[in-house]
Structure formats: C-alpha cells, structure tokens
Length: 137
Image 1 (spheres, helix red, strand yellow):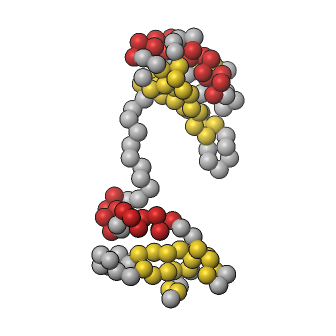
Image 2 (cartoon, one colour; image 1 turned 60 degrees about the horizontal axis):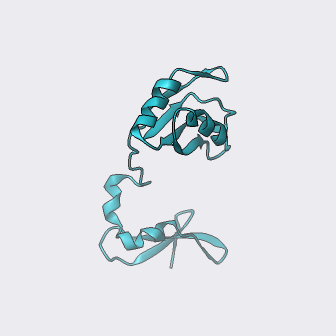
C-alpha cells in the first residue's frame, strides 16, 4: 500500500522516515520529494508499505503525530496522473518514432539547433530551427 506523507519536517531524511514507518510494519520504500532546482525537501513524500494491514496501521499510528514540531498528515496515496510533458491535444501531431527528435539538441555552425517536425502534413520533411526561430536548411 502506497502512502502519502505530508507536512514533513524539511530536515528529515529518507532513512529517518523509513525508521519511523518501520515501527508500524514492513516498509518497501520511502521517497521524499525535493525541489529540482534547490534540492531542498518540499515537505512531503511517499512510503510504500508491504501490505494493506501495515499501511492501515501506519495511517492510524502516525497520522496527526508530531515530528520536529510539525503534525504529520498520513493517508493512502492517490494514483499518479499521467503527466506526459505534452499537452494532450498536441500528442497526435508527431509520430511516436519521431518524438525523441523533438528533444535532441544539435550544434550546426556554432548554433544550438533543435530538429523539429513540420506538423502540417504527416510525413512532411523535417525543418530545423535555431533558438531564435530562424529556419536552417
């Protein structure tokens, strides 16, 4: 059972979180979510318990419990949304085999160039744009 743990102290480590939940049952994994720019904890994380029984014991034993001056919020985690990185209405424009090309960066004559597909027609030739939007041939 995967659990959401909110209002975590910013100083807590994954090992300390694991130890806290291990007192309630068998822990499979722990993950503290961090800010990708600073690496600092965002104050929440996830703990995966080995069974439904262990997860329910952790919720009843740790929800509302104070840790380093913060009251923990422990609940069953909701399923993760699909965050594919693209707006759904644009996904159909690019063939799956060519989607990786949209993220490859190339250097041409000292300029950073991103290969892009002309989405006007299926199978249309590829165009290259530099970062300023200038077409390169």
